[in-house]
Amino acid sequence: MKIIRSENEIISYCNDLKLKTSFVPTMGSLHNGHIRLLEEGKKYGNYLISSLFINPLQFNNPEDLANYPKNFNEDLKIFEKYGVDLVYYPKEKKY
Image 1: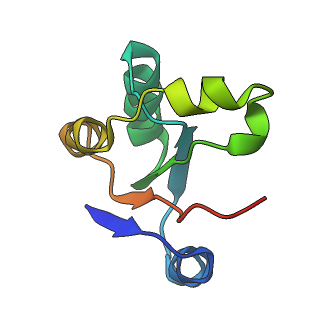
Image 2 (image 1 turned 180 degrees about the vertical axis):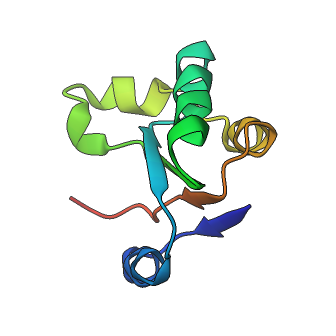
């Protein structure tokens, strides 16, 4: 499983893929709903990509963002178990 952190790298990497891909975006803290989407993605594509990005713009209250669960290592184990080929885990940007 490959992990990419840079926007430029993910664009370049995906442009070079000659496979039918499936993409499952997430905010981490994976649960059964995410797992079902990963399983479906594997059915319809030859290459499964998922993202893990907690978007600060989705939170009105800064406390909600601060308290949002972050389980990166556990999420990676789930991605690996369900056959994710590539994880896009962008570096945090200042908005």
